[in-house]
Image (cartoon, rainbow, N blue to C red):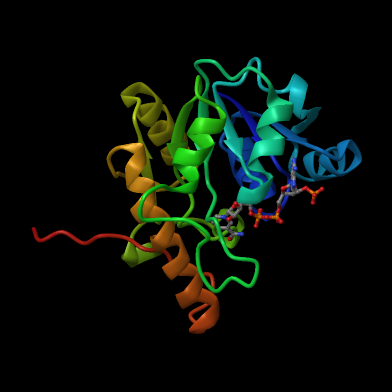
Length: 209
Ligand SMILES: NC(=O)c1ccc[n+]([C@@H]2O[C@H](COP(=O)([O-])OP(=O)(O)OC[C@H]3O[C@@H](n4cnc5c(N)ncnc54)[C@H](OP(=O)(O)O)[C@@H]3O)[C@@H](O)[C@H]2O)c1
């Protein structure tokens, strides 16, 4: 697949490295061209300006902090019909909680910013370190990517992409369910950092046989 990632930080670079290894054609795009080139060279991806990088993409991943989404999407321009993955947890500046929830979510706000795109919530419960350390937790299973969105074909495409990176997947319903996935991402952060469990953890569901 042609994958464009906007943002070359911990998540953008981690996703890019894993996607390159899985054989995808990856473009890392960002607002600082020099930093985008440097990050892309490290993982074997192409670098590009945000405005030039979305046209051919099968999947676009927005990997900026949530408060930067509006600016990044404005730079991206026309995203009509594009699959746009929102990975964000809309954190307060001091990481003590979320800035929105209950009646909306970052994913739904991003859908409003890019109304013609097919926004999918995914990867927000996956710590960046898992991209480099690997999503196979042995006997505990594979780290799941929880997927929520309103377009069935887009959700299937994101499932195929996540599984190609070595993750398992859980289809988690409509985009409005991002209202539950974002607090789950927050709990993961609270357990990992605040409560000392570290970043080698991920939320999942168990099923009775
Ligand atoms: N880190 C995790 O383990 C983790 C886990 C799950 C979800 N997430 C979510 O993933 C997203 C990225 O997190 P991260 O840890 O990768 O953050 P990060 O390391 O700080 O990287 C953020 C990236 O966004 C870019 N950026 C900032 N403002 C921008 C703008 N206006 N336009 C375009 N690009 C902009 C930054 O570029 P510059 O540095 O050049 O400004 C940088 O490349 C966040 O929404 C976070 O909630 C993170």
